[in-house]
Length: 435
Image 1: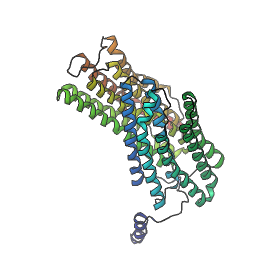
Image 2: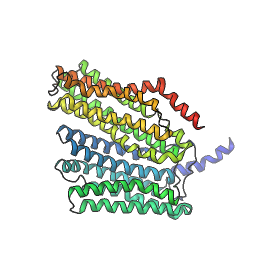
Image 3: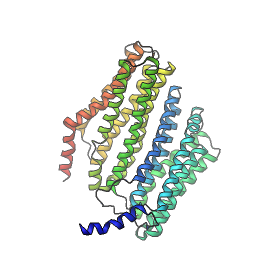
Image 4: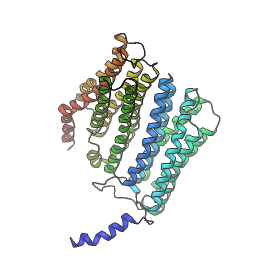
């Protein structure tokens, strides 16, 4: 007990005084490492970015710009999520929580906000057939990434053992930012610009794999990475809850409290909860701590996962627009909700397979059962003659809105119940075989 009391002053000084400290690298094998308050604060800025992207997606889907909206949304989600992933990767290896690290993190948070202001411009340009890239978006992206270049160079100076890897990361990020900036400034044809953007995205994802294979791994902690990704998943699921609340608020404003409003809000909460449950049925942290080499493929699978979760929120916003504008049909709402939910369920299945290094075909029947309610939500309205817009005053249109939201929630619920009843045995069996 006396030894612990002697350690307390030093511990408090480290927590309360953020003087400059050596950036020598964290222990990649440390068990039980938790997310810091600064990382949580950083993550919260992404609520704004995801919400803005979902709002723009819903607005342009409601206007009928489907292809342009999906393309601009994919570009936005990659920009936001990839910057987050890069910082998370670095902080997992080199977070020393000194003043320089804190200031660099806050500057990146400012970049997230600047990028968010560029999202409406990006979607409007895509709707006109132009490039989704714009200078405001790129400036925000550069603000998010340039501090990371400085942090990697600092790590290179202070962590001699991994100097080449740290310099490689700094150079790769710097070159990529130059490419993003030029793609916004040069007057290239739209097709060429889109091709350049796709090439830059692929190059950014390939670079870390090549760097760590050829120059050595950065000291990232696999368990810490798993926790950070799980927390961002929770934040993104908050968009589904917020969108559900907004949809019901519009319905209440039109009609007051009705059974339909109660069913929609209940289904939306069930959907968000079931998606959370389904995501955390994949045992990411214990598996990555045991086999950290699987982290790369696992983290890349989260690009569509984060995008799909936020897009579910966009689908609920489309339902709100249908009630307000009275122009969208039940099929529009069904597609806007069913497609991202299907993508998310498929990616959870794919993530399990990547993580476990097993393609267990016994999971296929459960996956098919989960997708059946989504197919029903899309196919039933036209088959049963519902082709007109949703009418908030009641009638078949409003009934279909309730049925669609309930069916989408049912699909995620089937996944959870099926795994709890049967699917977990497959995970245990694969782990037993690996041991």
